[in-house]
Amino acid sequence: TRPLDAATLRSTVVDAVAEFRLLRELRVDERRFRNAFEQAAVGIAHVSPTGGIQESNPRFRQMLGLKEGDLPQCLTTLFQGEDTAAEEDLGLLLSSVAFIQTERRFVKPNGESIWTHVALSPVKDGGEVSHFILVIEDITPLVNAESDLASHRDRLADMIDERTNELKRRGEALERANQALRRSERRHRVIFEKSPLAMMHFDERGKLVNCN
Image 1 (cartoon, one colour):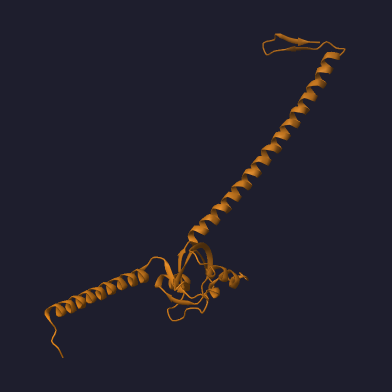
Image 2 (cartoon, rainbow, N blue to C red; image 1 turned 90 degrees about the vertical axis):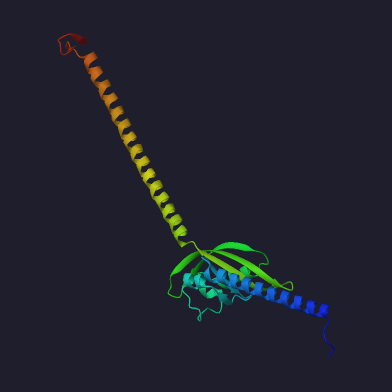
């Protein structure tokens, strides 16, 4: 074996050091991304093109009441049970080749349902979608608050309608009373004016106010 000359040895060492540094940086980046995945405040999962959950972070499993070793074969099992078009709906989601956002209600294994904001992004390898990155955020409190607000608005509208109708009824009753009073006043005025007897009105001080 021919001994390496100084230039070749130096080049080999430089290449080895550069490769070592690159590997170290890749490990640091991998660890950083892994920590971000595992410790994210939102649920993250890798979903196959057919809807299978390949990998998920703790927050995803916590929100949906899942265990790490007991992930469902397909997302449709987590869709709202009353949704008879779940498979078709999932197909529409997974057929997208662009980033999409929507709201989706999921059902936990214990039957409890939660509303989530869903972001789905395809990951391509060689031009083909290899899997999807699914990010979900629990918006159940917001949806419940909106529902409560809508119910409150409905109750308020009912109260306003009821009060309006009551005021209308009172106004109509007052108008009927005024009409009756005017009719009574006319009758008494005719009696006063046409009476064959002398009729006079005096005030509280005895002053003559009116006479027929």
